[in-house]
Image (cartoon, rainbow over all chains, first blue to last red; front, side):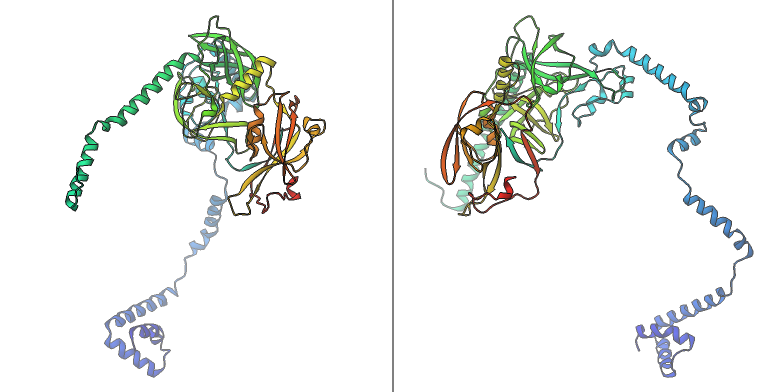
Length: 182
Length: 366
């Protein structure tokens, strides 16, 4: 009997489920082979440990808190994720949209007045202003470029021109001429 | 001189020849060529600098842009004569209420003489009060793939900027965009604001008008010969004139019986009633062989040939009918002011190839 066969039979040997002749063969090999002897010792230790654990029962507190903990974890998983503004307001410890809570119409009116003031201040510079705009210089991949409005306000060039260069965006060679009228 | 016979002598001889070549005056030839090219491009930019202008247009109010004011568009353009006439991209002047140009540090108002949305060209006149410098107009037919070109224009708010490239092709289409005439595709990386600028050849002559960009480093230009034709039409008639024959044609690919490469032919699908073609004697399924002196193989050949024709001109069209070549004389008319779409497109899935040149399947006719 070799090591592989012996290791396959060791569990049954320990439990005493082998025939007598086979058990003798296993015992002879284990007596001669140190590896299999170590394997047999580990197997016995495992069986002893399982025998101890088999009688271990959880304490009464485990079942008392079980349902509470289960529902807590379930709520954590299924609850909607906080939005960016909610998380930001939580972090900054401020009330979100204070202005809107105090009244939507006053907020809208204030925004309108600010827009009018900004537009009026930029009108005279519309034709004469040719200040290079960093945002435009960076935007090299679009045909008709307009800088974002907020950037334009910051640079007092509110009426950002559109720079003309038509762009063909369709992929080449995807169509063929079906007919021509001439 | 005796040739070295032994291997060692041959090797020494080869090494000596290489040393002579490296140390010879021709070693500096490449550098001098680059210097010459550098001087040429620099001189070309300096010569054309005064004739290329930045143009502004004030368009209608755009609700989609904040604040709600009139739109301000900027592009490039160039003078074509001493009377202050200049051309630019049609996109600039579309629905424009006011057009002006920067010239010699002044804002001068410009007058729109005419525009052609089909070729994306607009012709304007600047009230300069003095003769304007202008660029010489070349011949775009002389361009070949690989010819060096220089595109000059005003990118964004920057001064006029040259971009050197090479002609990559002469295309009739780019995807769904079908040009009315072959456009010059050049490997020039242009920026917004350079539309409407000139495309110059190595001699400093205008060979194209930049009308569009594609991809990162390709630009399309209307050939200068087409620019001349449209400008002449606008000056003479007030608007571009396009010829009208009254044929609906399509192209078809076939393989030669002798297993040659696949070839194309253009055949008549339909003849419109009350048109010059209806009275000239065309038949359906006639195969177009030539128009005037130009051979016809593809639809692009038809477009390129007919673009330069004028109303009232007599054309000789050779057709193949029932295996025999026939010549049809036709007097070209004026295209109706509200024409149907000139070109109809279909997506390319499989290129149809028929085995016999003369047999056009009935299913392909519609």
